[in-house]
Length: 201
Length: 265
Image (cartoon, rainbow over all chains, first blue to last red; front, top):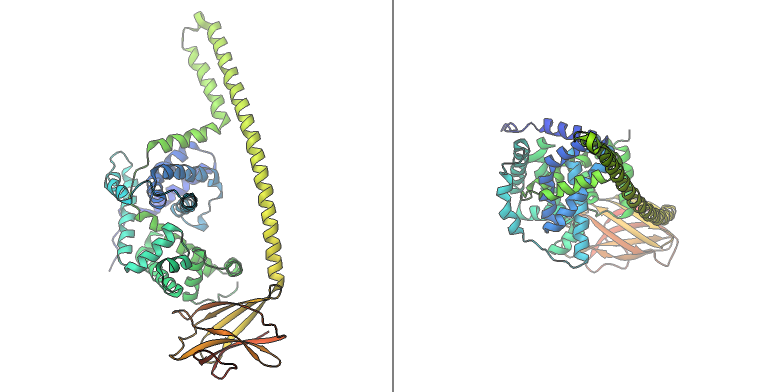
């Protein structure tokens, strides 16, 4: 079946992202403002899902964009897209923070149901850039569609690895499953992502 | 360019283990060394990272409070000395628009005083902060350099004292590698593609000396035919080889079943 055309031109958005990072590398503060406007909603939502605390997510997001501002000159297209670059920084920072909070024995200060309750308002936020909203919405629907194609156990394994930063051995211990089974599930989940989302990378 | 030794399945297995932090230090370094030579695996790693990063979009969408943007821009501005200097210039330009003839001396004095106070405060504050930051960074660098040196020494020692023994499949497509830490007197075995042991049977690992085979224990594989084993070097030496055989349940005193894997030191 032929894939549906993109609503938002993905290559144009990525190319704009690269231009902004190049300008940030030259210490252009206007570029940082635009970069923040384009990616902050995605990064805040993602970090909030990992750390599950509004106050902690705000601190982590500040640090993520500060790091992007300082390290913009180190970004290289050969190592991946701009969105993957900023997501990778955010994941690393958020998981570090989550582990620190767990070590300090600080519990969740926001319920995930509260987060989901705020979600619809945010997607249709009339003050945000319509292209940014559409881009986010289109990718979100595609990713949720791909996840829906996975079996429950495949989804559980890949989400524990990605959002909780757990190793495959830790997941096997947690689920009381053989390591080989967890590895097979992770591989199958990655294959589903590849099959359904290859055109987004 | 080195030709890639991995099948697609092996590549995905290694890349996922690498990304989830499951690879032991030695294997991680071997894979990183391989990645530097193999564009196929590098591309596979980059593609997998891109795909996994798309999972971020599945998060319930929540708008960040504007206070983050404001604080971020303040932080950037506070690091920019030129911005403060240009603000002072703007202040003096806007002052000219007032009835300067009447208030010229007062305005000039106020501007100079304001500039002096701002610059003094800024210089004093930034000087103290920079001194503290420099001290912190120096301490951090010294600590990291120390850690790096220790790690390098550990790695150098491990590389020097580790021998690789490849075990070939004799009956099936199974394969194995053994890393012999001659200093630590331990062996790490990685076996792949071993078929599940039939009911009533078990795999058994052997060390071979010039005199006799010595059992290192019986084991079963994971569902995907892989297994990692960590065993101590037996007291009887010299070790001339190592093997895996299929034995009756409970193991044997000497190999009586089929030899599946065999490698020589």
